[in-house]
Amino acid sequence: MLTWKIKRFEELSTTELYNLLQLRSEVFVVEQNCVYQDIDGKDRKALHLIGEYDSKTVAYARLFNAGDYFEEASIGRVVVGTNYRDKKWGNELMKEAICGVKEYFNTSKITISAQLYLQKFYESHGFEVTSETYLEDDIPHIQMKMSN
Image (cartoon, rainbow, N blue to C red):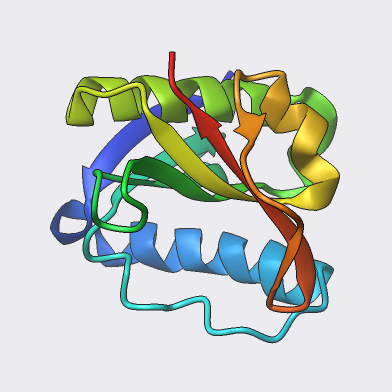
């Protein structure tokens, strides 16, 4: 079972910050073989949703208020560690992220920039495609929105 917490940047301990950056790097840089600037200056504006299992950060997402990333609130850097994907914690992560946006930002209008291959996953959580495919860091993406 995962333990969830949501923290502002200033509330993160150095260990929590290190662990979430390590997870993001493990998946988005190493696993996906994509050299890009993960530390993009937006972490200071985000709420950080951290899922821990056995005291290890295994799931994570950034939550943004409207205007801080997109016009609407948004969810990004959605990630579950490679060794934990068989547990289907991505679904739990998205449910927690959507609830976090609703609770902290008082809105259900959410925009995401999704990797194209995850379209069906995000559709299963109520998102709809709102753009053509585009490249972000040489990976096909689509913009998706939820408004309910």
